[in-house]
Image (cartoon, rainbow, N blue to C red; front, side):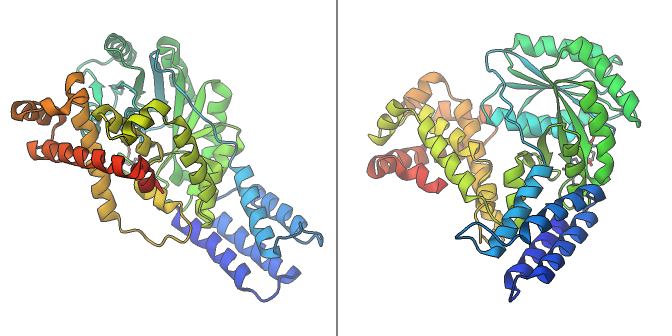
Length: 435
Ligand SMILES: Nc1nc2c(ncn2[C@@H]2O[C@H](COP(=O)(O)OP(=O)(O)O)[C@@H](O)[C@H]2O)c(=O)[nH]1
Ligand SMILES: [Mg+2]
């Protein structure tokens, strides 16, 4: 992601770290490197100068905090300034007791439809019941595109290929999913307008009818600092909006897009880093900058591990430790694991971690994913007492989960192994994996 920007920043830092002395000359050279890199990433000139002049002023002061090397101090200044530029970051929480509608808007080609499926998958991983609606009646093939993506993501889809009124479809879909007890409904729209003003009008019109909980503006990251205009118009038009920046994989101008959007005070909620269904990330400025600079983010990981441990229910923990783990407990554990993002992403956050062999990790993630579908296809009774699962039940479960029978058998076997392991390690098994 944002390879050029990352390389540029890291090279500048490396040069600073390996220089013999840190004097005014090295600091100025460091800042020139940073400027060049940020400008290449299409970050607005004013923002760039602002960042570097602040760092320069602070860095050349003689009294730096005790116990800090000048190099660390300067890198820390850079980190802080970049984080400041990227805004606050925002937690979004949707109640599971109501039906939350999320409306996606953005100009054609920005990545809405792809993102609709990704977001659906993201929320379904978090345990929400998700439905996705295709309200794009403009683009030929829009219906099929989203339908296929939803099938791949294993999330429910609603659309009417022959209906021409997009608002009608959206409302019908909303009703359909509400009846089915969904708690997240994602609506994909056409965004056929090229101009901001018309796009905003389209958004307002649909919003009026649909009454969404959140409207997300999807911006193509390859447009760089031009994203400012879209983000600003959007931010001024809606109170309940958030921004998604897509195509950050390899986009030379992605840094500019993020910085520009953030500078409008609009909240960037997600970023998208590829065409795959899992290439979605909640946007967190600290973590983002940490990764760009290659500092890793051990603190964030530790914090999340701690949180996860607190969340683990006492009674459940005791049951698991004594080897009486039910399938429901296993399912919870898998969801916990998912909270950390993908396993590859966890590893990426660890400093000093070289390029990771992704093939094996993909396999692991795939397996976890399949297990979740398998468990979802089991009845309550089966989850409580897996012993009753005979071959005809296995057949039914496999069909429900879209996997082979031998995969169900393997999961059950692994479950038994884990149960034993939990007993032996007093529940530290999964925590071990996370660490
Ligand atoms: N490289 C890359 N391509 C993306 C990303 N998101 C979407 N795309 C591609 O961009 C194109 C347009 O996406 P689509 O979802 O149809 O955009 P829409 O017109 O706004 O619905 C498709 O070819 C997608 O595969 C991303 O994060 N990275
Ligand atoms: Mg589309």
